[in-house]
Image 1 (cartoon, rainbow over the protein chains, first blue to last red):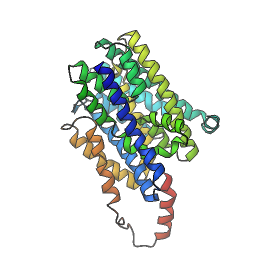
Image 2 (cartoon, rainbow over the protein chains, first blue to last red):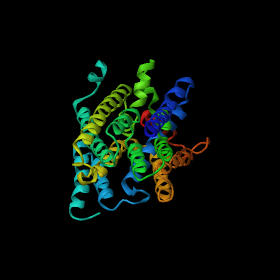
Image 3 (cartoon, each protein chain N blue to C red):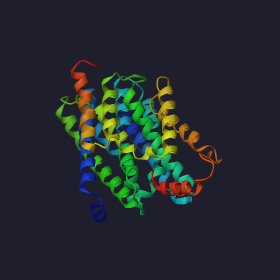
Image 4 (cartoon, each protein chain N blue to C red):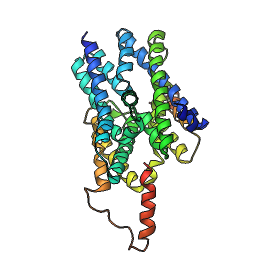
Length: 103
Length: 248
C-alpha cells in the first residue's frame, strides 16, 4: 500500500514538473530572447545528462567501458555517420570492452 | 496524426524506432530487476505507466529494494525528474492545443523525445518527431517492463549489451546540431563542467540541474554580449544571428 502511494506521488509530482512549462508558456508571451534561453537550457540539461550518465554511477567513476562507448558514438555522430551506426558502435564498444575485462 | 505521417521521413522513423527498441530492452531489464528484488510485477508496471521516466524508476526501485524509506525514494525520484521543468518550457509549444493533447503530450516528455524534437529545425517536423518518439517509447517501455518482469533475469544487466553507453550516445548525437551555435556550446561546456564537478558529492539529479548555471554564463544577466569584431560585419552578424534564432 505504501508503495502504491509512493508511486502515485512520484507520478503526480513528475507530471506536475512536466506540465509547469506548457501551462506557464501558454499564459505568458515570451520574448525571442526568452525562447532562445529556454531552448538553450534544454540543450545544457541534456548535455549535462550525457556527461553524468557517461562518467558517473552512484557518485563514482563509471569505469572506462561506458565513457569509451559514448565517445566512439559521439565521434561517429560528429563525422556524420548514420544514426544506427552511432548507436550500434556505442553499444558495441561498451559491451566489447567489458567482454575483454575492462570495467 | 495523419500530418505526422506525411511530415516524417523514413530515416527519422528508423532512428526513432531504434531508440524505442533499445528502450524496450532497458525497460525489460527494469521489470526483471524489480521483480527479482521482490516487488510484485504490478508495481513496475504501474510505475512505468504513471511515472514514465527511466532514471527515476531505477532509482526508486533501487532505494526501496536496499531497505530505504519509500518517502526518500520518492524525493530522490522527484529530484531526478526536476529537469523536466525547463524541458517543458523548451518543448511546450509542440504539444498542441486542447486539454487531452496537452496532458498526453506532457506525459510523453522524456529526455529522448525532447532531444529528437530539438534536433529538428522546422516546427512541423519537431512536433512530428516529438510525438512519434513519445508514443513509440511509451509503448515499448511499458511492453518491455511486462516482458522483463515475466521473463525473469535474462536481461537484467543492460550494461552487458552496452546499452548504458548507447543511451548517452543517442542524446549526444541528437544534441550535436544544437551545439553548433557558439552560445549554446559555451553554455553546455560550462554546464557539463559544473555537473561533473558536483556529481561525486551530490545526489543524482541535482548536478544536472546545477548545470543550468552554464546558461547564465553564456547569456549574461541581461547585458549585451561583447562584440567579437569592430563592427564592420555587424549587419551580416546580426542577420546570421536571427537566422539561428530557431536553431536550438
